[in-house]
Amino acid sequence: MKDLTTRRLSLSLSLPLSFSLSLALSCSTLLLGACPKAAPETTTTTTTPVPPSADQAGIEKWAPQYAQGSKDLGDWVRSDPQGAAKVFRWDGRHPDQTHELVTWAIANPERHLDAFAAHHPDWLVVPDLVSHHGAAMEAFLAWCHNHPEDATALMNYPRALEWAGHNLYPGLSTRPAQ
Image (cartoon, rainbow, N blue to C red; front, side, top):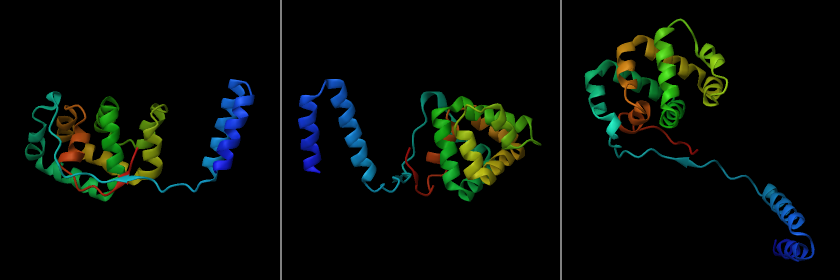
């Protein structure tokens, strides 16, 4: 490996800058491509509660006030912890999108996730959820149908699903880091 590095440096001194940068990048790509791929990183969810943000004031009262909905949402989390973790992360990054999904699910109880996905082809997380966690996502839509008041109340708080993942269901299994 040292020989390749030395060779690259000596070439870069005798070639124009743009070509030597291109050559250096090519050599690095070749060297990195030959390395074995590392296993995907995993993180574990901490059990330390995340305090609500200013716009989430009162969210900690949701679970006691909607006990059955909270219990059933927890059952959904346990049915597919990795799928739930993806939904929670998605909510943290795009709360407007998850809010729209829940609102749509409540208004369209007879429709399935693929119908929602067809209307949002630019939302990259939805096809991934459909293909890798389809059954769990249909169960989440069923939770929205079965608990429309609970789901609406929860989603009135921005990033509520993310908060719930950290505070109400902290025992999620390890999940791929993103």
